[in-house]
Image (cartoon, rainbow, N blue to C red):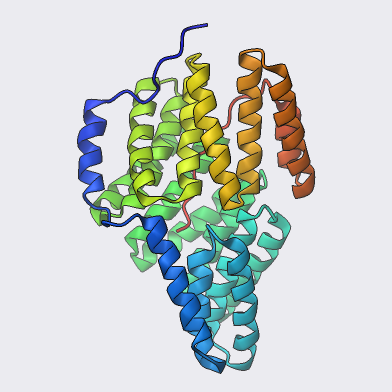
Amino acid sequence: MAPPRPCLSPLPRWAAVAVLVLALLPLTPAAAAASGERDRLEASVEGASGQARIAPLVDLVVASRQEAPERALSAGEEALALLAQWPDAASEVRVLNEMGWAQMVLGRYDEATTIAGRGRALAEREGDSPGLARALNNLGVIARSRGEPGQAIVLFEQALVIERSLARPREIAGVLNNLGVAHGFDLADYDTALRYTHEALRLRESLGEAQDIALSENNLGVLYARLGDRERALEHYQLALAVRRELGVPTRIAGTLHNLGDLALGAEDVATARAHHEEALALRRQAGDRPGELISLIALAEVGLEDDRLADAARHLRDAEAIAEALDQPRERMLVGACPRAPRLPAGRLGDG
């Protein structure tokens, strides 16, 4: 086994591009900004009554769906109750869409599919094209999470047609990203995946939105890792990690750390792999990301087997099995059953559109 070596050695292009992208970032970390936005919305909700509570509640659902999904769900339920008294179809579609996303983050895929399906049906009935595109995108993300990439691609392609007709570049890039993930990570169609992902990155660079740029860079890293181009994969991962640490969103940081851990383990740098996966696990637990926690535990079990820490590997697998049973999803149980010799699972992220 080769001796451990640093995984994050500097790369000239990475350093140059990172400076440019980091210049786009706000002076305060985005995690603090996001938390502050949620606090502001909570105050707005508290200061309103009746129909006036609807708008801040809807915004709170959107702001909480990824990092505080339980709050997104409680705010969404209250918003839906108020919308039953004061109907507003566009707001209802938005709430249903983002409640579906929050359920997915929590690993509740049946509930996610049901509530996002309600959003889709309402958007179709009301002729709400933006809401329908978002619902189709979310349903595609959920389908892929359930191990149904073919269905996911159908939904993403439908969403892309609508987004192109609406000429919304940020949303177009999000769906292109998701198509790249499904084609590359699930179907091993790397030519198609790279085409979609590079198009998404070009759009995101033109918009200058750092978080979205980091998402595309991370996913390009996964694709190049799958193709065996370790240097290019490392370059893209380093850029994504630098930006994500500045933005401070735990689940996004964890995704890239996971990928760097896999890359290090592939190079037999077990110490670096363990450090990356342990940090990713801690961040996913902090965020309440149960499916992500499961993947990190499987990765750490593989690391334990690699350097004969069998007790550690067994402990991580037991913890992973408990989560898989709690989630009650065939895909999660399959991952545990396939470990330890299944291919490692890069954490390419689907965009939230």
